[in-house]
Image (cartoon, rainbow, N blue to C red; front, side, top):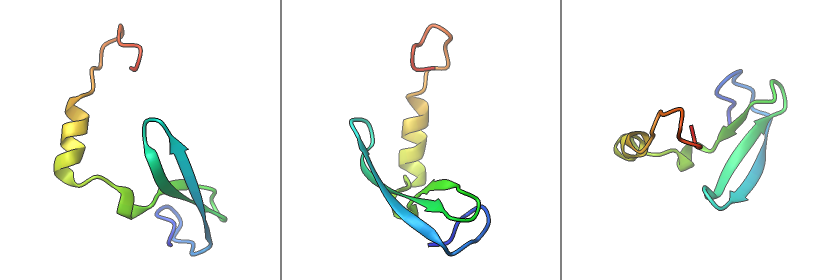
Length: 64
């Protein structure tokens, strides 16, 4: 897996589970230490827009 920041090929697989994201695979670059999502776990454009439209950019929103 190539690091999308520095193009290093030495990355380490991390598996992170939580209530929100379920189980997704991330990689950590051994060169620049970037942690990035496995490209296979990225949302497609339509699903990304649906998720974005759920955002409430309101100072009174505790998730903001």
